[in-house]
Image 1 (cartoon, one colour):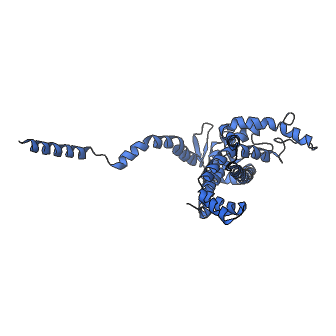
Image 2: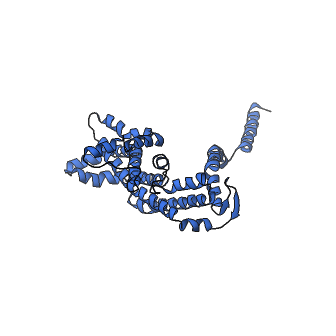
Image 3: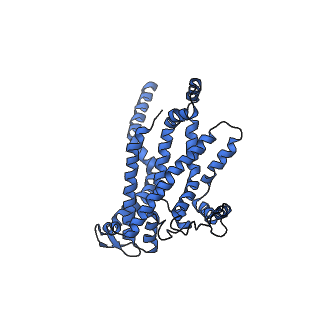
Length: 310
């Protein structure tokens, strides 16, 4: 057998071997995704399915299903004054925090986007809250709201007004927690919006300068439309986070006073881990999940129409 024939034979053998060893791209992709799929299955999908199942049962203190009750947990919740109060507190909390937080972050981003000497210091200050945990931020605000030594009451008395029980008065407690939450969340929203502003093409502003239009006209016709994808993202994330707020409520008020700050996630925590009513707590979690899903879908259906993609 000649050398050429041997090379051809070897090439055909190698080709057939490679074909047998070839793995479909779908399987290769799944193998790469397998660690993430396992993590999601263990820490997301299984708890979600388990919570949905437990919402139809009465359970013991360990969460073991005892009696199937169907929709009784849901009907009990919908007729419960405490659950209705928690829904009201949650909706008010969202209304207080999301619009004000987004507007404040946008205002700070517009200021920080100006090409002024020393602006880097202010950018660092505006975004500094992002580097603090919820627990640390809540402790800071707890001291600020303290009736005896808190800085806010010192300012109020200096202005000639009487001291306020910021976290102990049902009229002010939810607003006080909302102010603290806005401060905590501003850093993240500010950084994202600043990044969006810096990605806008400078030529648009140069053309507007040549046309002699005002700053507010540029803001309405150039900045906001070009920033709309970033704003859409921030509003969506802020809405979801507001519905899921827990840490600052637990540290500052523990749902009080008189359940004025008993948002639905804290209500779930109390029922599940303090009162050991796993069934009703699971039903609340299921209601919250579908409500957030509905709000998110509505946000995409209505809000995305006004988003201008470049």
